[in-house]
Image (cartoon, rainbow, N blue to C red; front, side, top):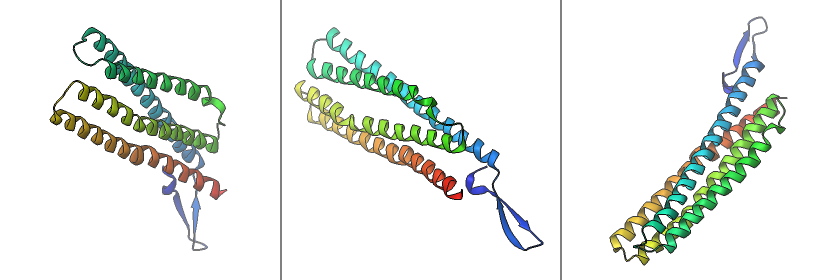
Length: 192
């Protein structure tokens, strides 16, 4: 049952509306949102760890196996991506260390969900900002290799598209989820 779908009971004797909140169901709804936020942030962290770590290591290895082209920018991008993977790993460990500091109440569970959503918003924003250095390194490496203007334009278009899609994901999914959880907390605390 959603918070907005509270059961309405009609008291026929007094002819007035009475609203009743099923606290058990509300708490279950909040717990499911908390678990959903935890699962989502966990999946996001593992995905970003894998993508950044594997891509960074692959770039470094390929640059030293095949030295036919420019290796500096590819190596720098590989190191940057490995650094991002290390950053995500450290942030994940810190987040997991502080997971059990919330009460097992409705308010504690909603605060826990909001904390995870806030972390997810920050992580999403940090990953959105990585588009700029990755684009710069990829573009400069292609330019240094003497790629045609068509290839350079394609690289630029792909990074603009990646940035726009990342911004849409950040605002439309992560920030919106956090705002919904904060609105739920506001309703929960204003009812008391």
